[in-house]
Length: 193
Image 1: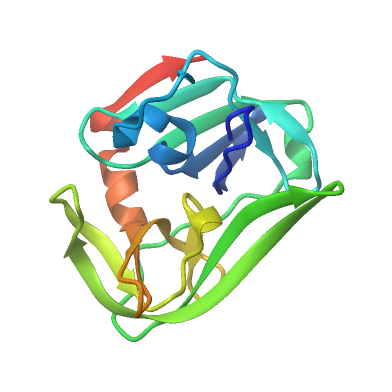
Image 2: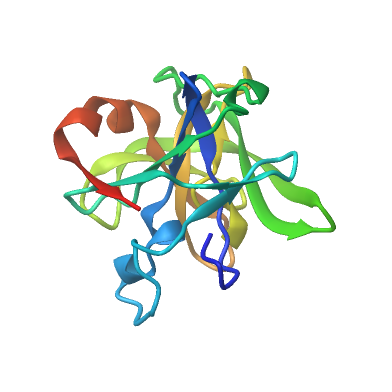
């Protein structure tokens, strides 16, 4: 989140050699992504707070060269061994039960999280960026869910929660994990803090 208080969620997807790799949405850490006139820039300090309340500076940030709302954060810390990482899978389909997890608030040294359950109603849906790589669910997504994981009943990450549409019905969309993994090496720019 930005030091002025903007927040979002993320998920640790790798933990190796005192280095945590975290997926989140680009709009969580880059206010210019949505053409918002803001004063924060990537060169400013981006921090993450883990569920145990520890605060860490982000050492590296990578963004997509294309219009994929994803950021990859690297945190280097000797405390990395204290954190588990999530496994991701491409094994998902219509009718699967899923859970969206988000961390929208931090109060009194406790990271408060939200959990909502739903069903996958479509896969490989076209997103607002024109890419056919989104999971559509009826899982309620709150503002703090942005960048958090969409997980299956085994606890594996199948996508990164990205956006919702509609006010009367809950239609949530998550960028598919298999798309993220298949495109990481080819479309991401490293932007160091």
